[in-house]
Image 1 (cartoon, helix red, strand yellow):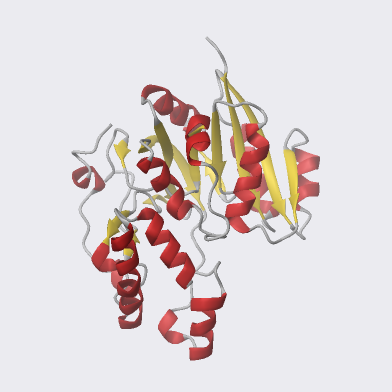
Image 2 (tube, rainbow, N blue to C red):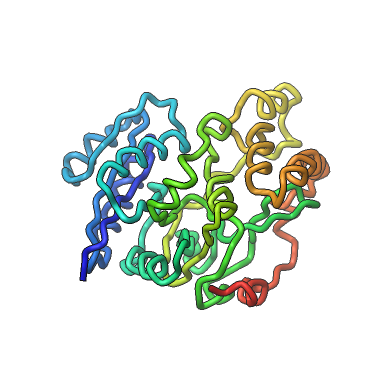
Length: 306
């Protein structure tokens, strides 16, 4: 049986401890039949991340950034280096991840079984390991865009891969052909959130997006954002118009919606709906969203199994 070549790509900035922990978990993976190499894009870390990687993982290739790449350009630079190695798949990851030993093996099995598919892992909150984290967001026009589930667990998801509208970028296995067809992430319009439109772009080109529930990754919870209504008017304006890498950025919401929506008109019109809900305290990402009832994903996606 021919060995399958995979290149793992991760952008990092000043998270030395998490990065080393991530690389150690990758090293413990069951990689039978797989040839794995790793490319780390160190975007101007000042905590000796690169030095620590060279010491503990000398086989890892490090691409140096100047501190201005952010997630999207950092991932793109890593993909460009990875493509030179002629892999079959590129696995993009966040460096604050711990991999189950069968994760990569199960991602590849799913990709090999399902033609023209991009495969995402089942992301779990490492502080509450049974809790599903940022998996399978769905478009909702009346909530202003893509919405995350808040109350799903390992027991509420399907036991088979299921089709989704978008795969969050924490851990995604891309066939090289998908990247060749779709190109790289849009680092100009979405410097920090390029994953918001990347897999939907691939879906429009005929690629199936799947979540593989047997491929599990434990992720660090996101940092809490300051409530938009609680900050000063001056800071509101700055967050909206002058901080494209922030959670409330207008450009991030606009371009993310345009890329992920069923059509561009819906994507455009959903933007003011999102900000109106934020001002009213009714946005899905805030405390209001935590109170909403949710069906189990295995019920919601029972007709979308691969």
